[in-house]
Length: 96
Length: 465
Image 1 (cartoon, chains in turn orange, green):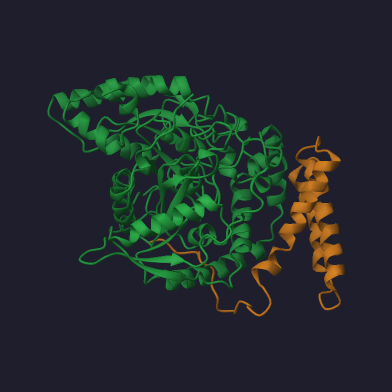
Image 2 (cartoon, each protein chain N blue to C red):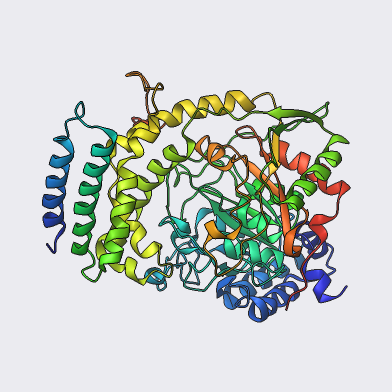
């Protein structure tokens, strides 16, 4: 896996795993385990960029990615759901 | 006047001396070049000393003055820029080994505007590599070594504008330019005991500056007085076609009444005792000329940290995608930075967009909460500078602080100013911060100048070793 194309293929697999997560059935513990698995998979793919990453570094990367994958819940805490009409702070503008 | 005393004057005073021909720009430039050589490395403050360009610009400044032409109050005053800003005559390293040979053949807009104002560029100043975007957690995070506060070399100068903070505090430049995405002007200003101004997002062009987070990057002055920050900001501000976020906005001031200053609730509850003591003493000074309103609350229910985290993750990973994919993160100084890029690389697009949606709500709420006030005052940080050699989170675990206005303020693009307000633990400086309304920088400098006219902390300087 030496190219960005290879990496993206692997990432797509991880994405499929993420998409396949049955949200209704997931308990917090199971969801955590699942995101951890996804994070580990992503982290291992980083050796495509730096083959000399140690196992300890890959584990640390996985921990960071796992935290990233949980950002969605932190951004959208219970009871404060964004409305469909809530637009991003930065939106595309057609120039003059 | 002794060279030592001269070196620590503020830029306003230096410019006045040059204008009155009490000293030439060349003499002053030589003084600062010599001090940069002597002290710059010891404080991890300098990347490149610009002898040729500095002396060339100084000679030109003196020639113009001799011909009766002055470009204004900064004419002939030597300064330095954080090494994320392009300037002809030196590499622009972004503080990081993979970029140490990077050269641009143009001046960033801020450098060009300062040149047009007659200022003299003498140094590219050290910084935390990549402005800290990859998640460093200790002071040893630059290929030039740890930044060290001139007040005590065993302690960090703060980051990521470590060089501008240290060089200004040590009297190695007349003033400096730093940058802030989330704390990088205010933190070194507090740890080094100088006056630093984070402008409103969009006030100053970033053309020629390293991008870390396009929606939060700002360039601003780090100086030895609040009046200097005002002078430098007015010089570098304004629309630039090369940065479409930049605008030419007016500079409103407080007129015909006492400034209304909100004191953030529980400002010092978990601060070091000296920070709390200095803050209370500062409030007593402010009461002399401001109307203070106690217990002002930050809108509490927003996930400020998570929102900022998702935004900087996504933008930083995109900004440095080439570095990450090249595997050259391995060359970075900080062990955390060597892997941090790979962590950022996996950030969900949906989280980034949701963070931007949440940011719009935060922006409106924060501005609404603070709109009644000309400034909100708080301790810049709950502690003095961290020791070099310890992870940041192990430095002062008992003093986490009880208020964090940096992230909300940066998410909303609001200006803030930190000035020194005394010494604390280990004889290190503490900082007093003012955050204002969008485009309200001059209201902040007005209040800070009032504070500095009644105190002398900004005139104290460290003894260099």
